[in-house]
Length: 224
Image 1 (cartoon, rainbow, N blue to C red):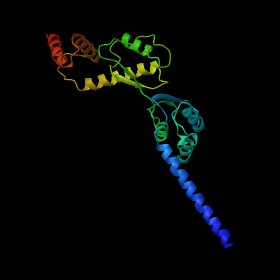
Image 2 (tube, rainbow, N blue to C red; image 1 turned 60 degrees about the vertical axis):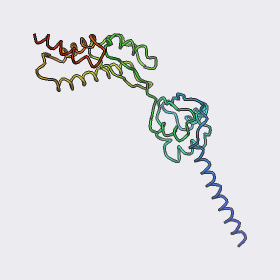
Image 3 (cartoon, rainbow, N blue to C red; image 1 turned 30 degrees about the vertical axis):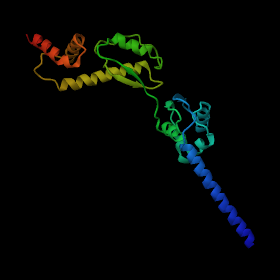
Image 4 (cartoon, helix red, strand yellow; image 1 turned 90 degrees about the horizontal axis):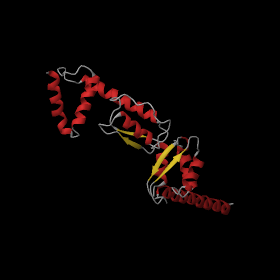
């Protein structure tokens, strides 16, 4: 009996050592640089579970151990919060970084820059030419001065209409804020007139430092 107990104790210690060793090995592999040779984009579709995602990650050469990725996902509870979207992974990204991105929804952001001085027609053309935007092509040109020049971020699935509405809202909010802080003595009677004058000044010069002086010249003419 004593010999049997000694054997069982030895077996249990051996098993514990094996489990601990396996955990350390798996954790090191989870945090080690991955096999991806260069930055790449990867898409997670809605409804995909952790097993399907892990298989796709392995097929794309982003991770090299399905079991470790699935095990950590499930043990941490993050297998239930992986978010759909398009992700950019850098070269040799570790499984820990991959899982963090998927769990936090750190999706790849694309950008459209609308520089000052563009017409609404030109802005619409930029949106229509953006292949990664979804939805119908924009056919109706918004009124001039209703779209705010700015750099806009978007993700896969956003539509052209979404971006137009975002630009309109941004312009409205910007004009409202600037109008509230205006000098009451200026000879501008409405927000629309302010936008028109700003457009005229923009056409006169593309140098930011010159705009105040040129605006002052037009202001004096309006007073006269």
